[in-house]
Image (tube, rainbow, N blue to C red; front, side):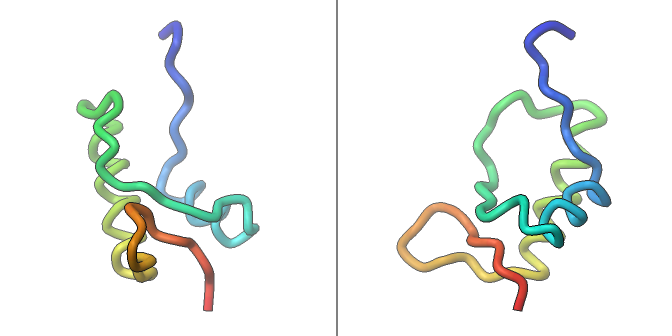
Length: 66
């Protein structure tokens, strides 16, 4: 487990967004995917795509609750 960062669950991610602790989301960065976390990453990506619109001209989605 050395060198691995803890990854948030979908619920934790949603909480961080609601608190304003996250401003941007970059999908598909390709870092360390797979396994059980791959499912969580997919859930987070799907939630972001369903609730936010990508900022034009940038490779990321700005997380701004409207």
